Image (cartoon, rainbow, N blue to C red; front, side, top):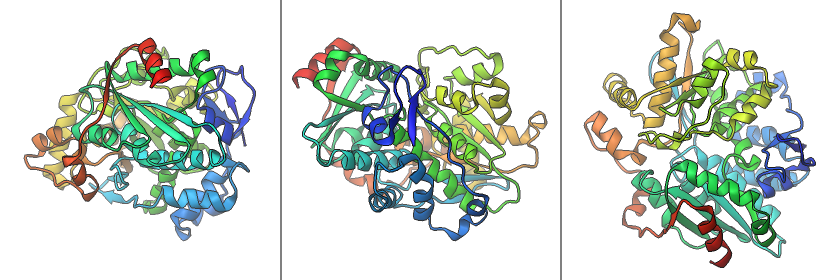
Amino acid sequence: MNYYSLNHNSAKVNFAEAALRGQAPDKGLYFPAFIPQLSKDFLSNIRNYTKEEIGFKVMKPFVGETIPDTDLQKIVNETIHFDFPLVRISENIYSLELFHGPTLAFKDVGARFMSRCLGYFNRHAYHKTTVLVATSGDTGGAVANGFLGVEGVDVIILYPSGKVSKIQELQLTTLGQNITALEVNGTFDDCQAIVKQAFMDEDLNQKINLTSANSINVARWLPQQLYYFFAYQQWQEEEAPIISVPSGNFGNICAGILAHVSGLPVKHFIAACNANDVVPQYLQTEEYKPKPAIATISNAMDVGNPSNFIRILELFKQQFSSLKNKMSSISVEDITTTETIKEVFQQYHYILDPHGAVAYYALENCLQNSASGAVGCKGYILETAHPVKFPDTVEDAIGRSIEFPEQVQHLLSAEKKSIIMHADFNNFKEWLLHR
């Protein structure tokens, strides 16, 4: 498998080079040269496979010969070494719980896969690779945990000060070792802009081996397909599901669409957004207009210029009508998000986190709207983070406290260590070169 740049001005590369570079030299995102097609026999008999077998079968064509099968199988096994239950909430809506990993967020899958791939590729390297990652919430913790102690790799995480939850902040600022957290006085978009500019700076790249751990990196993006296959393995309904995905930087739903293009049965996708409504507006007007991010209670989705949307357009071959036929999008305000958490808890005794609540409202709205053609259909949401990561919002909505899972109890007494920095690239560059 080779990968080409979506800016179309760089040579094709294999999976290893794409993962190590993060972005192509022409600053485009890498995209697979072809989409592997899964056999109908595999999909129709998917319940007969273990999730480890599914993971290897799905990922092998994308990795190609860059990692031997035995090593790839080990990487896959370690990546998905926790549960992905599909839980029924109501008669027509299920929840795919993606918060059973070590940092209680869906991003554990991509971060664990990427860290192990880079560890393999750097096993004989003389120079360290420096991973830069901007986070609006869960990415930072997942990357920090996934890369902790990986030899030959330093990780630098940029996060917006005061705009992530307490648990999220502790997950990315308390580990130490090869993990450094930069607390930026700005928004997630400011953090992401610094990271992007770092990859474009020739002087910086000549002196430091840089790569990205955001979902722009194929090693972070591609394994997110896996839990869509795990959901299908558990899907008991006759018709294919409508899938509602909390969407910020659009890597997650993009991976789901990739799985669908590979053959996975899906009736429709919903990109469930908060007040950051660039994509909902695009699907109404066919005009893509990035804008500054708005802070919301579903902070991991506070993205005003989603990086991965260009990959979604590529999956649909730049055909707006094809995209709109398969994917819709809705913007959900904070007050509606809070009310959804409250109502679902009161009616079904299920606790949603703010991101899952956005997805639930979007799916319920679709299933009840006669104009959508989905009345009577069934689907599932991606519950992307444990509610405990957003205690103030969730506890206020449901009127009770949430028990802290074992995975995060130790963080409550851990010491936060971060470096405060202005949202200025030159300041960041100077620090990076002389740290």
